[in-house]
Image (tube, rainbow, N blue to C red):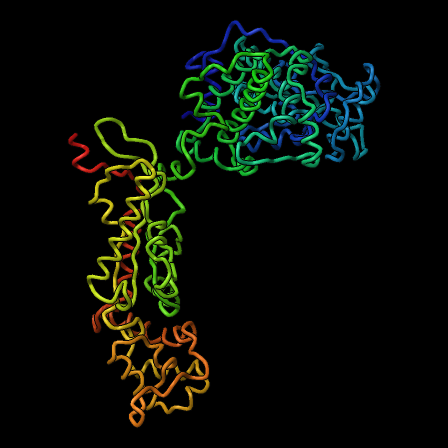
Amino acid sequence: MMPIGDWAAAVTDGVSRPPADPCVKLSVPSSADVAGIGWAFTQHEPLSTGEFISQAERRGVFLDTGRLRQLYRHGVLVPFVYVSGRQVSPPAEPPGPEPGGGGTSLQRLRYARDRGRLVDLGLIPFRPRLPFEKPDSVTSRRWWNGLLYSKHQLLVLPLAEPLLDRVTHSRRGDHFLARLPEPDRALAADAARLRSIAIILAALEARYLPALDPEWMQLTGGSRDEWEHYRAGFDPTALSARLGYLPGQAGKDAEFLLRRARWLDPLPDTWMQLICHAPRKTRDDLTGAALLAMDHREAAEILLLFREDLAGHGQAAALPAMDGQAMRTRLSYRERSLDEDLVELGLSPHPRVVLAVEGDTEYTHVPLVWKELDYPDAPELMRLLNLRGVDHNLEKLAALAVTPLAGERLPPGRPGWLLIKPPTRLIIAVDPDGPRFGTPDAVAKTRGTIMKDVLDSLTDQGVTNPNMLEIDTLVEIRTWPQSCYEYTHFTDDELADAIMTVHHTINGWSREELTGALAYWRQQGKDIKRVWKSGKWDHSQGRPSGAWQYDVSKTELAKALWPDLQARIDQARRGNLPVPPVVAVVRDAYYIAQQWRYHSFALSEGPAAAAT
């Protein structure tokens, strides 16, 4: 892609210029008349000279009042309207209901419109005495030059820039006057066409700009109810006749703008498609050539929506199919879903790994372990899920978390499907108990049930024979070496100290009794909760002594145990202790997520189907 200046120079010199249409016949309505149309300038308010200069600067083009005057003199950039100090035409007919409010420039425009003071400078010869900056003799701070521009006139900046690069200055008294070379015929023709387009857009933008994005509604002037009333009464056929602007010309002008947008845009198509998913207001953060390209696309989209509206009213045939490149530059065009465009760029908010843990202790510890290992705070890498026990419908939940979303078929010769979102690996880390995880066979059966639900969901998407080697990597179940997470990672003494920290009574037990109860339930292969749910073993009665008055908070217990786990991690780093199992799980989750982070993915077909 060329920078703006290089592109504009190529246009001026006739080298590698986007093809123009020599048969285009401009039908230019009066800008003063268009300013009288109801709701005009309610979305993009008119710009004063200073505001226009600021907007040009955001697009990487330096202007000042001297340069603006020269662009007007050569007909390249004529102010949209001039507000005269006296009546120059009959007052405009009342435009009908329109929203009140607006900024100073809009209020000035309406005041002059209602009193017949608007002048279309494009329809009269150059006025050399028209002031662009405050004369030295004027001392009032309220002085205004009466010039208003349209935001859509910024479209001409790439054409004007090669002239601005060749500006010269001459001195007249204490002032330096800018001088621009005469534009060639091609530049002058395109500048005239862009002025005509800007005038048309001023009449159309209130109807089409708020609904420019298919998924978003962004209204600037007026309430939603006011705009809906305005839209209901909007007649594209009558407006087309009033402007003398035919559907065919709208289509040609739109393609003219889209070609220029594609030439200007420094962003590749993949990033452009991603930007199109964002609401319009977020595109205002662009600058330079990217913002100028967006200006062109926005203008083209308004014209195309108008053209489609006319077709819907029987005033034009359906819009002819645009070529692929031009179509992809439309703001409303969605070749793929947002997820697919993110995957194309190796980006996605979907986690690469979901780590499901059984209870509050591990749910509290895993983020602390992640941070202790200096892993980045990136939710798209790993998402933590608290199962809160394993009695829920775990299989359905697990299948929902990891089932790939299949998109379109891959090209012939590569049997398979593109994925709408990147694959997610599910790692389930649980206690080795219960009917689902109590034995290796139970674990295998649970995993098989999850995989069946994954395959059923893929079948519902039209995926009939996925490669099982790829599907098999999606689900992994790990159980802790001892009966529960706490017994796996901490000694009875550490557990006793932590429980005494977070529980005020420990049921009246001594530390020795608490330690003994912990050891007993550990030996029985039970969960640590049996200590406060069932009590210690009473030898005299041959049964546990009974539940505590209130339970131990597993979250608070996890916080009290964290320093012990943190010390174990430190010792494992130095090679003095084995890596704690929870650390191994977190580490593996991180490495898998990193491996899958910046890739686009496809799901291939199984070998049997490929052979047939």
